[in-house]
Image (tube, rainbow, N blue to C red):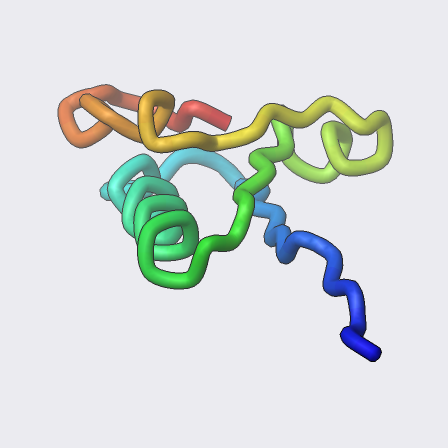
Length: 75
């Protein structure tokens, strides 16, 4: 009998204000998780408030492109 496995998923949120390379860190985690480990990545908008109020987006390869030159955070 084979055991069914659920898709793996991780969540990312930012809290405490913007800092240098925040989008680069989100991009690095997201691209590594999706390509190397086949894990879905969920980004929570507006920090812990987004977690509590379930305001989230799936971070796919297309949404992680062209982040390195953006200021602020995509989350």
